[in-house]
Image 1 (cartoon, rainbow, N blue to C red):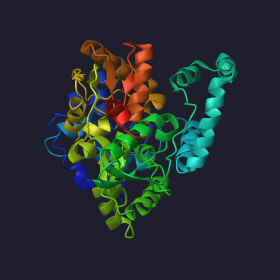
Image 2: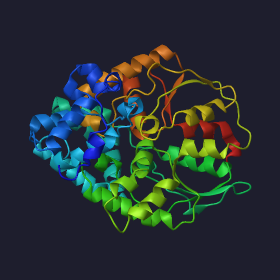
Image 3: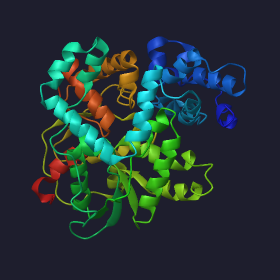
Length: 418
């Protein structure tokens, strides 16, 4: 692993404070499935002492990249960077066929919004016709389980009404918004809500026409060629917009975009531009909490519990701001669940590639949600929302799952002009 920065590896002092924060170690109690164990393996591989064989790959790929270890680490080890760099050398998980499918998705679908829209249009047709029932009869059990996890594709995809939408009232900021790849196709209502809340708070909202997928799924699974191309494309699309911030309503996307400077650190043409870009990226909740809400919020009688998305709490170090925004809604009651920042098992495509571990973590999460005795779950990240909705249906309690922007938009009610 000649491209791996050994200085990062030697920051780990093997103190063990990360162990019980690591989901896979808590389940297996195996040192090789802990952050310090994996760092030891990567260090040995980087020094040429062990081979990148199947066992090595299994240990690295069982990691969820939740980064809970980073929050616990007193030495400031950036484990996510170590693991993602190592995955560049081992590629995505699965059989050769699975790897080929994933590579196709990462390089031929995610960078192209038109192709993604076509795929989800066909998926919607499959779900709403008799094809799904017929196909499930002939599917092997593993495929049936994956099919059951597919969310219902909505009747309408999100498209901004214009590339530039004016602020409502006095303009306080000009912001660009990431449309995303999954968000407009599965969570169009969240994008709509995000735009309304931003405008209601005096933001002129810009949607750069040339923007693309952020590349987070690629980076997490070791595909960096297309990821770097997407990063460069987004830097060019967003940087020249004269905006005060680049607002992202998906935690995983925001974390990836805040690390474009690391992804493009060796690119002489983009390394400086990437630093300027990352300085502008803000999570939607982070940005609104810093800007300060304006206008009247209508009372809510909901009792909610909040799930910290891993890439928000551990990746972006944002915990306080979403809670402050929830508590700004009159009448809304927030009850903390036990282990709110423990991974729900979604982790990008992990719930598909490592279904067993993912479901074990999801069951644990749903038990914590049940104990909180809330009316609804709030999770500002699409992967978490999909996973928790599936968990609510399969394991209970059968509660609705909202994005933070959904509840703020509801609180503004009719005053949030569409």
